[in-house]
Amino acid sequence: MAPLNVHIKHAGKTHDVVLDTDRPPVVFKDAVYQLTGVPPERMKVMIKGGVLKDDTDWRKVAPKEGQTFMVIGAAGELPKPPEKPIVFLEDMDDSELAQALAYPVGLTNLGNTCYMNSTVQALRAIPELQTALAASAPVGLPTQLRNLYRNMSSTVDEVRPAEFLVALRQAFPQFAEVNRSGNKMMGGYAQQDAEECWVQLLGAMREVPGLPGPSGSGSTKKFLDQYLTGEMRRELKCDEAPEEPPSVTVEKVLKIECNITVNTNYMQSGIMDALDGKIEKNSPSLGREAVYSSKSRLSRLPSYLTVHMVRFAWRRDIGKKAKIMRKVKFPTEFDALDLVTDDLKEKLVPVSRRLKELEKERGERRKVRKRTKIAAEGPSAGKGKAKDGDVEMADAAAPAEAGSSAEGEKKEPVAGAELEEENVYREKELKELEALVHPDLKADVGCSVSGLYELVAIVTHKGAAADAGHYMGFVKRSVFHPVSRSPKEPGLPDDDEDWYKFDDDKVSIFPKEKLATLDGGGEDSAAYVLLYKAKPLA
Image 1 (tube, rainbow, N blue to C red):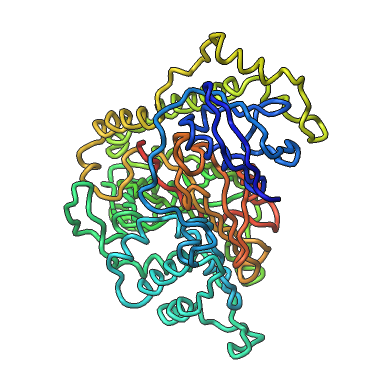
Image 2: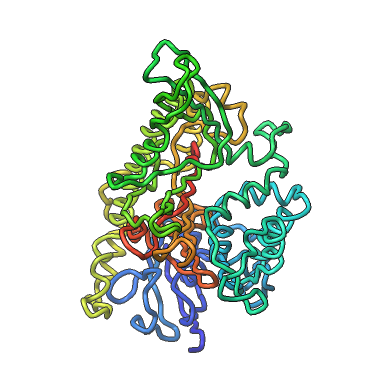
């Protein structure tokens, strides 16, 4: 339909504007903003039946040439011209289009490579890794991973990770294993374990230089030691000889394990079972085998904590690994304070306790803003559409009454309208929390300073056998898109909790409500590797 020349009336003045019914109402509102200075969030464009919404169907409104629309709202400062010229999607190349749409791409399955594809996608949830690789990537697999991520960020089409796969198999020949019933010339490569790929791939990143600290000072640590490595303190005490001094060892770990038994229902309990246990070893004081109590706790928490759900176990009766199908619930928010040493817990508690309190306050502000928005939209918000989806027709006097009400009568203030921009609160909170961070943690680049985490990526396995089945990756949407804390800022709302599902080359939205389906309990997809990210302070 051809654009229409219409009029808008605001504050006693009439303006001419072009209305393109092929474009959404938000475009029309922006044009009105350019003329009147009324911000879209404070603007009401009156139409027959109520107020023009961002999702109103122009066909239901049926605007006509020369029609006049009443605009209500207080004008602010007129918009300034954009610093950069506006570029339309049809004028962008593939690289610019990929950045504008910010929609992640899939990876081609090159023959039983879903284990690799899901791992690569999940590791994209670590933006610091891409930053470190872009700054300095050692020759070999790190360089190939950097190139692969660059390709994935500069196209809207699926990517063939052929060069990366060659580099992976050269570095770790186990991933070049051929099916017993096939040969590699026929594409008969065997299925591999995604968790093994995860560990080997991260191990190949050991020489990637670390990132500088907040002050800009350099770090002698490598990237992996900064952001993904924890330190595990293990203490062994002899149950049969209490007087025997305990032995203590400290080792670096890239993951923690969640053991799954017939009694395991939750990830937390499975992790604690893996950290505490009984072993038999030679006792130097008794001169024989004795039972020891083993207690392991983390003395350092990294910014990214990997949890391995131990779903595959060796079965002697069948002579191979079998999958443990049991349903085990995992949290989207994880408090790791029970996993750490007493010394580290003492350092983490002040920030952890206060951050939890602030998160409750943030949630309350979010609720108030939602109520405020609904109240500001008025009764018409719920009356704009009939049950069959058509726009209800109001009396012809409705717009005039609405206008007189807005201009002549003083409305009751909406509860919560006095709230400041969310960013104002976050800046204050950040200063408060930073003052609580222990000096040792502040100096340790890449560590967690609160012990509180949020789930950002998952690798799942579908099927009953360890050497078969299908792997998929899941990554939280907020990893790829900026989160907006203000109606004026573009981006996802700060309460968006949906995910992307990466099934090789197929990428789709995965609603947060479906995460519970990945708990396991059958042959369908079950969480196998989980990546938790330390919660930001603001």
